[in-house]
Length: 394
Image 1 (tube, helix red, strand yellow):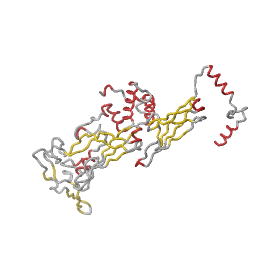
Image 2: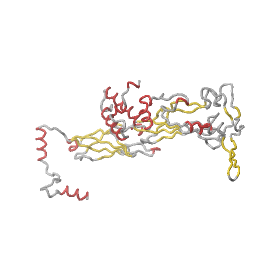
Image 3: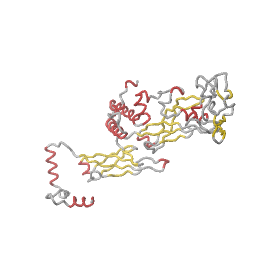
Image 4: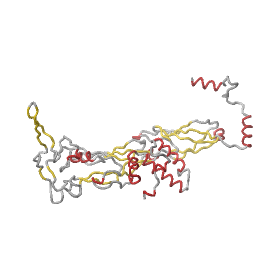
């Protein structure tokens, strides 16, 4: 199926070395061109819009982009890297360190696998909090503004159901470590110019557990835990912004020795909107009107995050003029009110006028009695409005 997909860089029309800003601009251009609201009933435009969304979701996420650059479409498939510890942890949207995970669960090494724990000198039997699972999700501009529920794929460490977590094959059990005699620590003597120095350190053979596993479980290879892919649903709060992270307490890997479960950290990417720009909790957009609409006024229907709103454009509206809709912006985090929406007016100056249209405009222009004095009169004298502008600028 992945073989039939176009290259994501090709979809957005950018090079492989494109910056985040270039990727964002390319996506926004395509989103505006193929947005369903601008192409009602156009199945081709809808397909291209979805294709651009999929490409942006991968290329805007640094982890997914790195896997895509290395493995292609297979690298961002939800099933990529599935399988126990030997199958790797890629493809589930998370960043995993095997040493951190097993260290948090078993306090530094288990059954001869001391290297997994990173050689921690802490008491291996003390309660320890589980490690944090990291993943990412891409949502739309509207979903970020209003909040939503999203399912994310993660890989979570769980006790091996084959051995019950003790790491031993069926019918066997851990045995006392012969190196430390079950103490979990060994004494090391060192001869120095000041005499023999004796120190105590964690037993490397059993990782401080005091027991080893001569006959390890075939499923978990004696570790006592396996990595399982899971899909969990998270609540994205209204008002979250691009590149912010959501922390789900207790959503991570289990703790060791009765310690608390770790957290799930969800990095949120927000797709840019083809019409709206975000400024804090305010929303900006541009609305294009004709010269006649700006001069005479008209009834407009302005797009907002809550649907279209009727607005009476006053006569004599100037290009670049901005008006505000109070409370039409983005919900602030923790529910403390909403921002505003600002609408900038863009006047469309007609091009390629025919002769009749030109004559009518000249006739109209000749009837104006209060023309702006912003021309240079004789090459040396600047009109009053022009001069006052430069004075203000200075």
